[in-house]
Figure 1 (cartoon, one colour):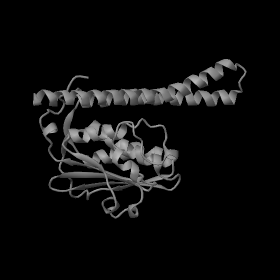
Figure 2 (cartoon, rainbow, N blue to C red):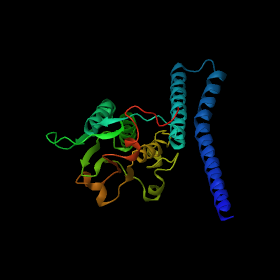
Figure 3 (cartoon, one colour):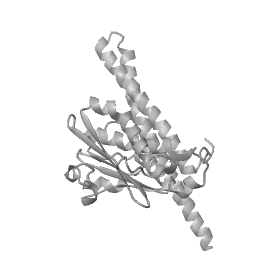
Length: 268
């Protein structure tokens, strides 16, 4: 009887989570769809609309459709990871090279925003051991963290420090920006689905799924990701200002070690 009661409570909890998730997805879809419909109706009702205004409206429509595409893709990605049906391609990964590649991918966008990206990496004369991991998924985590930092730093004058440190157990990658940081009342929910941190006026139409997906990826590799606070976050950089995220990965995780370099963790 106790086991049946526990199973029933678990099913009810999962059902509530499903309802909350569907409610959140519906809300996130409704906002861009409402904007697209309103602008399309305005253009349809006014065939003589000024060309500049029409182009402005079309630009917003394109931007909102792109946002919808990102949302749908990320919802699917998160659902696959959480259900165990995501594809994982594990291989030997040079984390320093991966960090450099991610930084290079963001370089032009950061340059246009007047943001400085500082790489704080281990001495090249003493290369780190390789990780057994999915390089594409770890790149996704890095781009998520760098992209989030880029949204909130000052323009111009933004500064992001991307730091890599290693010890006998594994490697830590830290992304620290000089933006306004995460308000205390939001810190506990920063990894919740669809929650967007930072000041409301600075939010830029993200999906609120980047950090939850990043957490799932890091935990799949046997690691952990956290928003650092106070003395933990300073690390000798930027005087503790801004937001500081760090993920740590073991040199050999159970998930990575159990898979061949190109095995799939499940079907798409």
